[in-house]
Length: 75
Image (cartoon, rainbow, N blue to C red; front, side, top):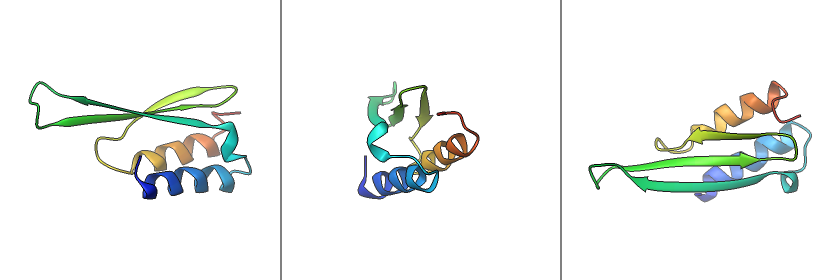
């Protein structure tokens, strides 16, 4: 995960009033059939929920994560 993504991830958690230490992020990278195309997914786990986000386009996944936090998806 890039430093920018990590910062956005932790900021979203703090802004929601939660502790960043209660979330775990794992990044998975795979090559598509065309080896020049890399696919990225970020898997987020908390005590009560888990979600995956497409991160192939960069850091935009953090916006989806922040929306999930605001909607109470992670408790």
